[in-house]
Amino acid sequence: MTISAASSGRVYGDAGHEVSLPASRMLIGGAWTEAQNGAFIDVEDPASGAIFAQVPAGTAADVDRAVASARAAFESRSWASMRPLDRAKIIEAIARKIEDHAHELALLESYDNGKTVHHALAVDVPAAADIFRYMAGWSSKIGGQVNPISGDGRQYHSYSVREPIGVVGQIVPWNYPLAMAAWKIAPALAAGCTIVLKPSEVTPLTALRLAELALEAGLPEGVLNVVTGYGHEAGQALVEHPGIDKIAFTGSTRVGKQIVQTAAKDLKRVTLELGGKSPSLIFADADLDKASIGAALAIFFNSGQVCLAASRLYVERSVFDRVVEGVAEAARSFKLGNGRNPDTMLGPLVSRAQQQRVLDYIDQGKASGAELVAGGNSGPGDGYFVEPTIFANPSADASIVREEIFGPVLVATPFDDVDEVVRAANDTRYGLAANIWTRDLSRAHLTARRLQAGVVWINTHGMNDPSAPFGGMKESGWGREVGEEGVLHYTETKTITALLD
Ligand code: NAD
Image (cartoon, rainbow, N blue to C red; front, top):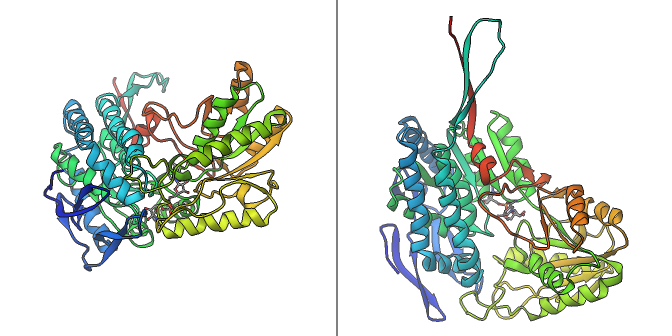
C-alpha cells in the first residue's frame, strides 16, 4: 500500500491487514491543512472501539477558507471553461484511480465504518468508480435548447443554456462514506461546479483519500475542498455560508429539515437525500425462496444501515409463516464479526451511539407486544454488533413500524389483498424505495405505480445504477441524484434572446 503525500504513514492493522492512514489534515485550496483552532476528532474502529486515527475538527473559520478557495477556482473558470472533453478525461481518470486503489479504499472503509472488506469491494468501491465514469460523459453532453418563441412578430433568436450553479456545499453521511461522496462530487464536477465537501465526522477517511486521488488524477487545485468536522459546526457553517450557491445533502430527515430552514434565509438551492422506511411486498405467487432471501438482504445488507433498507415486510397471509421463517433462517445464518475477516457476513454498526439507538428500538419492539422471531440482542465481543432482528405482527402504530431505525431490524405483517397492502405500504411519512415480489407481471407494474416511493424494484432490491435517477418522495427528500436529473441539479438555466431585425 502506498504512503502518499497526504498520508501520515501511520499504519493500523489487525487480522494480518495493514492500512496506511490519510494524515490528520483536510484539503483546502490544494493544500493539506489542520483546523485553524488546532482541534481534532478521534476516529474509531467499530469492530473494536479502538481509536486509530484523527481528523481536524473544522469550524466556521475553516469553512470560510474552503469556500474562498472554491469560489476563486470557480471565478477563474479554470474548471468550468475547460474543454468539456478535457474535463471528462480528468473525471474518468478519477474513476481509474479509484479502481487502482480498490483494496486500499475497501480496507480503509472497513476500519472507518465497520462494513466488511468484501462488501466495500463489491459495492462501495465500484459504485464510486462507476459514477465518475458515467458522469465523465456528461461533461460534454450538457447542452441547451433553441426556443421557438412567437414574440411580437419580429424575428428573434432565443436559446437556453445550462450553466454550472457555482460553488456547492456537499454534506454526506457515514453509511456509504466513499460512495456517497462520489455520488455528490462526480455530477458537480461534470456540471463545472466547484465543491466544498463535508464528510461525516464518524467516517471521514475515504473522502480525504478520494480527494487526494482526484488531485493525482489532475483535478485543478481548489476545485474540490474537503472540510472535516462536526455537523453542528462545520456542516452548519457550510449551510449558512453566503458564498455557497447550493447545498446537496444526504443524511437524516431531521437534519434535512434544519438545512432547508437555514438555506431559506438566502434561498440557496437545496437537494436532499433523506431517510426511509421502505416496504417489501411479497405476494403468494412469488418465487418464495428467492423472495425470502431477497427480503432478508433488503434489510440486513450493510447491517441495515442503508437509506433504502426495506425495513417493513408485508406478506400475503397464505404464505406469511413460510416466508417469515425463510427470512428468519437467512437472518440467523449471517455470521457477525470483524469486517476484515473473510468469513464475516455482517460487520458491526458504525458507533456505540448507533448500536444503542438500535437496541433501544428493539426494546420498544419487545415492549410493544410484537412477536420476536429472530435476534433481539447485541452481538459478540467489544464491537458495536446487533443481531439481525425480526418482529412479526407488530401494531401499525408501534415505533418499530413508523420510525427509521437504520439498523438490522425488520417488522413483518400479513395482508389479504392488494388494496390493503398498498395502503399499508404508503402509510408512512417516508417515500424512498419499495420492492414487490410476484410472478404476475401486470400486478407488479400496476402495484409499482401505486406505491409512493422514488424507486421501486420488482423481484429484486437495491439495484442502483449511475444512469437511474435515485431519490425520495414525501419526507425522503427533494430532487434526484445520478442520471441526467442528478447532473442537471448542479446547473441553472439561462435564457438568452436576441432581436434579429
Ligand atoms: P445525519 O443527518 O446525522 O448526518 C449527515 C451529515 O450531516 C453528517 O455529515 C453530519 O455531520 C451532518 N450534519 C449534522 N447536523 C448538521 C447540521 N445541523 N447542519 C449541517 N450538517 C449537519 O445522518 P447520519 O446519521 O450520518 O446518516 C444516517 C441518515 O442518512 C439516515 O437517516 C439515512 O436514511 C440517511 N441516508 C440517506 C440516503 C439517501 O440517499 N436517501 C443515503 C444514505 C443515508
